[in-house]
Length: 226
Ligand code: ADP
Ligand code: ADP
Image 1: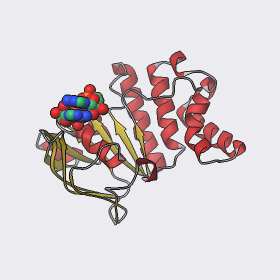
Image 2 (image 1 turned 90 degrees about the vertical axis):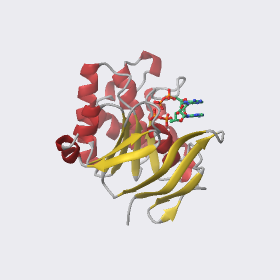
Image 3 (image 1 turned 30 degrees about the vertical axis):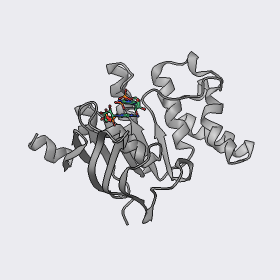
Image 4 (image 1 turned 120 degrees about the vertical axis):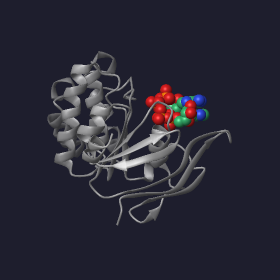
């Protein structure tokens, strides 16, 4: 069964802008799918519809054989990482990462165990007491990824997670996300306008333009027929 299916999905903002125009895609379990294309082509909107942060105007979204159109974001088995990190500014790194577990009334001991586990993987063990404003961009993005990881989501949704980092750090974090994917063996959907990120991370690349899917291919196929 497909992890995610989008069937004839449209998104119109204010009944005017057609941001997404008849989007059809099947995403299998454990694929790393990259949405690539110029700014404004509908990548982010599509991702936000999968997350449930944006309503679908028409068409169907399926996850694991269930129709999700009306399902609230917190009832979807997904976790999202945003370009601007979206950390809670008044909370420490530990509290930011643990927040979703706190809402689920998971014991303190369990929470500490899980946070140290992901902190170790992401190399942020020494900054757990800090507030977001005391962190570098790379550290903030690691915290945001950690916050998504503790939810053990079926699908990771990442919206230009590296765009606010400088080139050197971007390369490093790109390799780390690749490593994370190999380690977690789960499904990723990743939005970028960066060709290198698409080529190196994606097992399947979805090229979008003006709200339309232009091409779906593997990195190899795209590289041969650009
Ligand atoms: P991308 O992620 O590829 O840059 P978006 O999905 O953000 O593209 O945007 C697709 C189109 O929808 C653009 O024309 C954008 O201006 C428009 N759009 C995005 N969000 C909104 C919104 N909240 N209200 C109105 N128009 C929007
Ligand atoms: P991105 O291209 O990375 O999605 P944007 O700067 O286009 O980032 O959009 C940032 C936020 O503004 C998003 O939440 C998007 O939905 C919203 N947005 C984008 N375009 C418009 C628009 N034309 N009108 C209203 N909101 C918009």
